[in-house]
Image 1 (cartoon, helix red, strand yellow):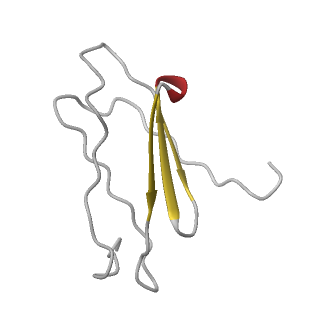
Image 2 (cartoon, rainbow, N blue to C red):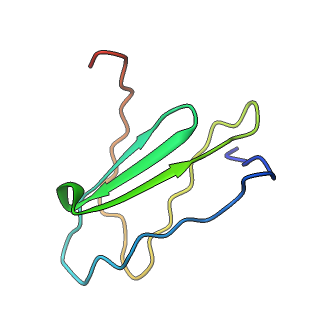
Amino acid sequence: GGALDPVAPGRHRSPPLGRRAAVELRVLVDTTSIEVFADGGAVVLSVLAFPLPGATGLHLDVEGARIARLAVAAVTAGG
C-alpha cells in the first residue's frame, strides 16, 4: 500500500494545465520526495513524503482527463 505517515498526510495539486489533447508528466520518486514535471518543466510540483515503513504504492489522480500511457522505470545512482 501507499500509506502516508499521519504526521504528514496530504493531497497535493498542481495549477490547472489547461485543456490540451496531451500533457506529458515526468514523475520522479525518491525515498522522501516526489517531483512532478509537466510540459518539460513549465509546471513543477515538489513534495516531501514520509511513507510508513513497508509502504510500496503511489496513487496518481487525474481530473478532467485520462491517462493514455504510463511507463515506470527504476533509476539507479549515476544514471
